[in-house]
Length: 287
Image (tube, rainbow, N blue to C red):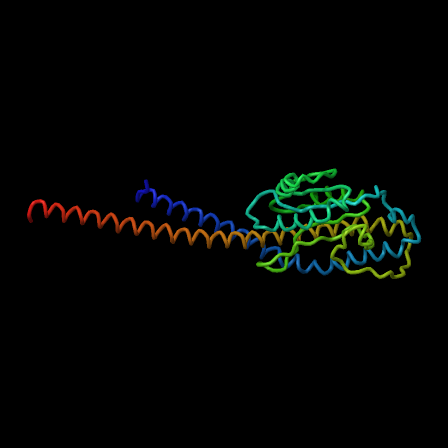
């Protein structure tokens, strides 16, 4: 039975939830303001660095073993990396990235690296069977230890394609993928085309040695590109959280309006009932 007390409790609960959601939204917005300028300034540099990385490898393809085209030891396999989150309240961004990931993983990936619990859950729900490695995704800050850890694992693969979200604005994020391994674009049947500039073979002079140059690129520049990609995703998922929380606040406001209307209607009905009881008593005593 609906009572005034239960309605007042519902209003109080909705008000408390709204306050909590607004606090989460403000924290996310604060982190966006703190990190946005740095990420955007680094974006163009990282993209050009990735293009240069691919050009250097392409230029050196006739100077080293064409099967591995690398100074480092590689296993000849393709790794798909799915960046997700450990917790919820990030809107639909993780699902959108997964849809793009699932489109290619079955046909092109040899191994899969899932970063974040939500990504692991989605993979298990779809019953995607691939050699799998899982890591938690830090929810606060990304330190060099985390980048070094995943970078050292990725370096063993011939090709590394990262699926993530790219920040396009506070209200918009793009699910995308990027080849961060410096591999020249493959034919369509061999692997999906990542969103990087098309390579044109440019002749480079390597000094002192091509192997040392490639070793530097694969260890140092690879890490820089990886760090920028993770930072982009951090910014995009925070933006998605702001959008999701803002929608949640609008929904809570609608529910509050309905509940307050319900309370007012209950109060009026209660008042009418008491007035009717009073008039009935007056009629009974012939007043």
